[in-house]
Image (cartoon, rainbow over all chains, first blue to last red; front, side, top):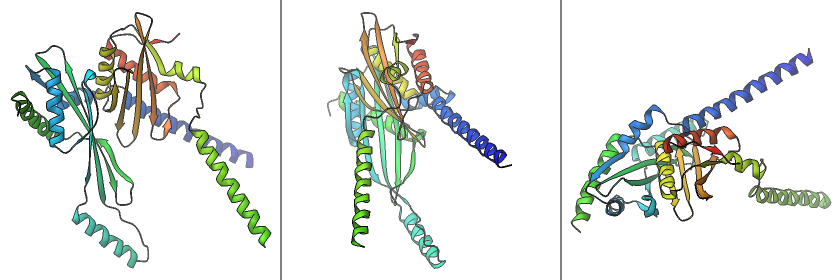
Length: 184
Length: 140
């Protein structure tokens, strides 16, 4: 009877182990192979500029990133890469009030609990230019963000896929290209 | 009583020293032998244009949803991170092999864990191979 129980426990552990390995393998397959969304993301994140060389486009891109309050972390002109980031406080008063109210309620009920709210955000972006010839140059930008709550835990850690953000960025980049081209 | 306090303190000190030494050893620790790890992480491609190869690696990173953290042409390295509830960090380095080929080596860190299993590297090289229209050959 005892042996049977030990065998059963072993079987459960083996099944659990296999399940966890399979789950992690699925994460890698999803993360490192192209999906049907890849082409859609590429179209969302890319714009082609006619009559613009790569160096000028990189200069205009760096300028617009500075306009938007980003810090340039790395650049490699030979590969057409700009890496930048921006840290911001994302505290919303309503969320703080809700958090404090819930904490007081929990305390009164005899179960003191911390109710964290979103506090800081780091937006990371990489901009890459590609040029087939000197007449047409492509720009692709990818945004990701990490949000920490008031307890210092990571709340969000993901890619930003909001089309409006990309449209707004490229609209500002078009203006910047014009300004750089006219040496303004 | 005093003797007991000294014994407990000595034990705590010993534990602190062991934990410190353990953390330092962690800096250079791997579970796989160096040669096996290199072979798992490396592929050979029939390409000599280093700039084109680096740019294709960068484009592949972006297609996979990575943000580029760093790129350096003279050293031939590109690093990037994919955030999707998890953090998957990758560094890819390239170096010429003979006059017709280039070795591409990648290393993956998933959250706080270095990946030393072959499958994730196979997925990455398969995607890169499609982007380059070239076959990824094992390093011999």
